[in-house]
Amino acid sequence: MQALLTGSPRVVAFGEYHQQKKTVRIPSALKRFTHEILPALRASGATDLVAETWITTGSCGEVERKSVAQVDKVSQRPATTEDEVVTLLRRAKQSGIEPRILQIACKDYQAMFGNGQLDFDRLLRLTRDQLETQIRAALQRPGSRMVVSYGGALHNDLHPPADLAPYAFGEAVAHAVDGKYLEVDLYVPEYIEKDPSIRREPWYQQYRRAYRPKVTIVIERGPGSYALVFPRRR
Image 1 (cartoon, helix red, strand yellow):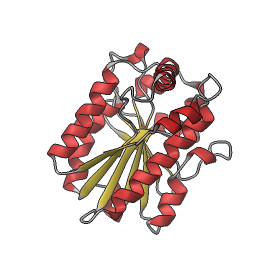
Image 2 (cartoon, rainbow, N blue to C red):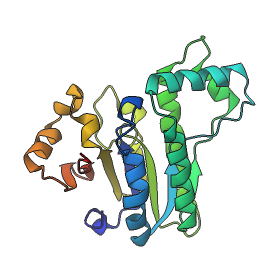
Image 3 (cartoon, one colour):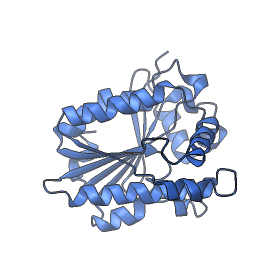
Image 4 (spheres, helix red, strand yellow):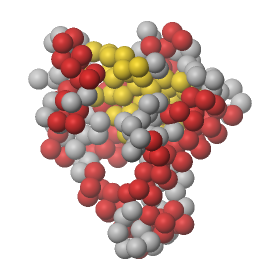
């Protein structure tokens, strides 16, 4: 991370390949980020953290409950993920990094679940908008120097394919900070080795050629865009 940060980026946007219930025994990218990368970011001047999560209160009634239930069902994330997010936010605060989360209103749940089924296009657009809003707010906070965001490996894309571009804030935020933007996607090797969509990516072949046991591999995919693959744990 110290090598990647030599250009003094204003925003460092991390994306992860999510842990699922079937991979719960293997430490997640989120957990490794909290314990291994966050301290390096703080030492390099990080002052703000935007996390792709929000608090569910139940105050929006049935539409909120059903929306959250469908997101949980489709994502197949283990119950421990929520605890790891809380740990990340707490560790950030304790180290002097100001944490922020998304702000989802009742009207947002209504828009996502208006036809009785969760509209994933609306969900992804809302997540993109909320992440960008919170990042821009962090940039304007007095004393802010380096803003870090953490979420899925989609919204932070600098160079997304055309079909995914509506869900990515990378280009807009990079423009807002005069190009001082860094995209870093985090991958746990045991999660991605059987995913055909990942295996087809050009960077994945570079990773396989560069692979060494117990070594973190970083691949530059393009200007300002990197894939970081943690070492295998088994």
